[in-house]
Length: 192
Image (cartoon, rainbow, N blue to C red; front, top):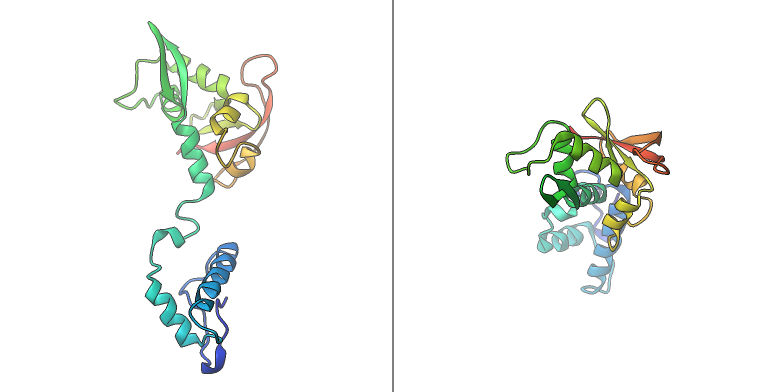
């Protein structure tokens, strides 16, 4: 994919050493062509385009469309969202990811004293059901608690579709989350 025409100087090949993701390449190419148009009235030769791009120093990781993938951002947001858990003497706020680790018997050293059963039950009530293998979580595609966690973000709806872009994630069937009316289609997400 070329971001600028060959112009009268000829030259060929891509301006990048590896092909970018199509949508990112299309967007970057258009933006770079527009930026160059502010600096020149004529068509860019390949050499002029290379010189222009090198002067911009675009070696930042933000240009890699997979470096900060949307699905990874959403997953981190969900795992860092806190749930109120009644443990022992009162309620405490615990991140979802930590609850899942506690429920799996892999509590980090800084984890509060929440029994595994309580952690699993609280996570499940919010829409995160740990499967028997201990390595997969079924995430409800319609849980109101998850919808609340994602309110005000870029993912308030259809989060199951975004989750399915995670490595190893796949759609699952109807799954119960332990109470009447909680059965929902899920997205299965590997934890390891």
